[in-house]
Image 1 (cartoon, rainbow, N blue to C red):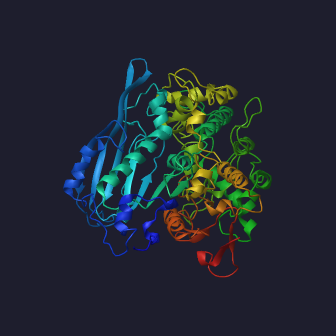
Image 2: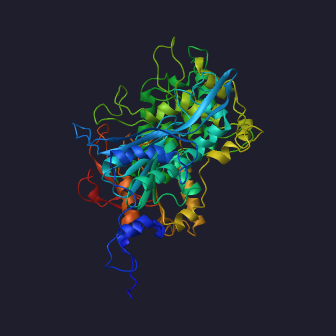
Length: 613
């Protein structure tokens, strides 16, 4: 009788889960001398790729209501210039759950479907990577990056199409939010079904089995990454969440508050748009915000013992510490490019202190003072009254771009116009949606300026016959119960820009602190939490990267090493982009609550001369 033998680690997937085909590929479990049986699935080829079209609609392990549009073997493409090589792969595209939805406005009936794409490389590394979306989704994200590294990849448009489902009287590309099923697909179901579909395609296409699976995304994709750790805790071995909108629904109260706060300032300044709306976009010039950025650095740059143009002790950089430096720039006479008006300072401080409703409720967080509010995009012409090399991402969300021609000027802040914040705060977050929600003539901004903030806040938790689950319960991804994800062996990396764009960095810090408590930790012990989830703060960084920061990172490689080698990231090295005062600078990003500390010697442009403490 043959002896029983143990499978090698290479033959074991995460949490010990492995399909029978993988066991066959590793050899017989009863007799080590018996050769593995012939795989029941043919090797990848043009024919086996094309055959996936019929398999995907036949049912079984595939989701229902699948339509395959394309199933074709794509030949390898050599690298060309900055474009990397693309391997030979089976490209499969299609839809799921096509249907006729509700009217988004009178007479405008919407049709919906989940559009998806799956790429299956011929030279597969046994791994799967799913990509999250961005904005309010509505298009299939990039599926090439990890494919080029040998991963099978997948993505979807979250169940609506920005071209098809676009109604100018229902927040344009936000029109899907007037349909409950479309809301649900956007919130989580499109990812659930695409994950199921991709796994079924891999099983049908490859002789070997999936070993590891990953999800990554930033912004809305970051929210989706947080969501899968909570709703699909056993689906992904490793997850990377960048600047996530994980408190998307309650964050919308900040957008309404911000719009109203800046409109009040614009009114006092006599600034009116071409449509007769208070013009928030012109309440601060780029130079005004650079004055603020410089004041933040003067107040907080040296807290870590090194003057380097970065705030490395963000939680010590409080309003109490920053306010005197702002007040020092208060105009003593007429406002000019060298100073800020008292009203500008007071309004900005209110914005940074966070939402306060008329009844005194605080539904969302304040902001983290950081140089990335503006900051320099080069060492030249930096922090001068005539500076033009100023980072503008933060203002694009919060204030909008400054416009010299008032005859045509309109509000354009992403927080309260168009298909981003304006759509979120008028049709997606409140129940029922606020309709009509016209995008023309700053219609969404007008709606937000007219909201009673207490009533608006209540609408985030409301339900009715058409929307039986609130937007809060559908979309919020801020649970601190990740026990199922942790038990399955999952690893989570979150990276959070300190400047923030649409989302408050303090919201993420608070969530992580609460996650730590939920896992038995305390302010002096994050050990249990860091066994499976780590947060990395990013000084100076803007939404999803950029800004005066070392924001070029590879968190995906770190989570792969953590999952597959057991090497938890003690730091993630970031590199400063070209558009910074110190292009090429490297710094370690540290697992919160640790922060970067200079060792005391060596170049401050080299990460090797810093530690996490």
